[in-house]
Structures are given as C-alpha cells and as structure tokens.
Image 1 (cartoon, rainbow, N blue to C red):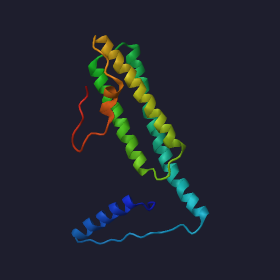
Image 2: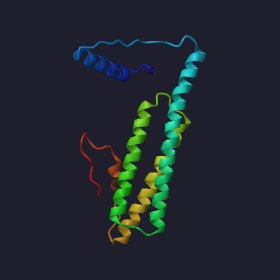
Image 3: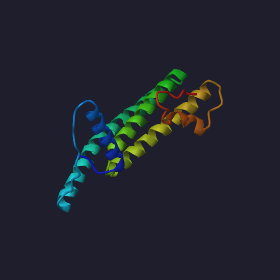
Length: 161
C-alpha cells in the first residue's frame, strides 16, 4: 500500500508492464480510507516507519561528527582523511535522499535529519579548511568545498578536489 502520487503510478505501471512482458499478470488498485480516523492511522504508521529510519540516520550522523572530532583532536589533517570523510558524508547524503523518497508524510523527524546533515557538512567544511591550511594551500571557497556532495550523474562519481 502506497499513497497515490503520479510517480508511484508510473513506477507501478512500469512494473506491471514488465511482469506482462515476462508472461505474468497483475493489477494495482486505488483504495481510500473509509474514515478520517483510519486515514490518520495510516499516516501515523508511515511516519512511524520513517521515524525509525531517521533515528538511525541521526545516529550515523553523530558517529560521523565524532569521527571528525577524533581526527581533529589527533591532528590527522591529511588529504587521505579528508577524502575518507567526504565519502562518508556523501553516503549519508545519499541515504537521506533515499529515506526522503519514501517519506510521503514528512514530519519533525525529517526536519531533524536535515539539521543533522547540515551539522555534518559544517564539520567537514571546517576540517577541510584546516587540512588545506596545514598543507599550506589556500582553502577552497565554500561552494567548491561542498560541491562534491551534489549527486553524481548516473554511473559517475564526482571527483573530490
């Protein structure tokens, strides 16, 4: 059961067509909750499932922040550490996008996740500036420093600077 959206309809239509091409069959139906109480219960259930995912995501963001802090305390300001942190942040961003795609009824958990990823970006930005400073290089501007977190094109990883 999924909320009705044009995107879901397209996905289900494509799935149905693929099943038919392989000799199978299927149908999908639209349904409506008979009462507002049932509708509210369904929304609450969807939100509860996403809240679990957002909670785990928040825990992973905290782990990321702790790792950056640990490397900062240990003065591990190397490009190898920077690239590792960039990849970890990129994984978090991709994961958040996947959760958001399943989040048909965003609530406070979604906002909390956005705040968590913003803190991770800020921590990485500060770490990046320190790495460049330690290497005697000019710091990349903020746009360049965060450019790698944009979703790469299909099948291509965007290189770090």
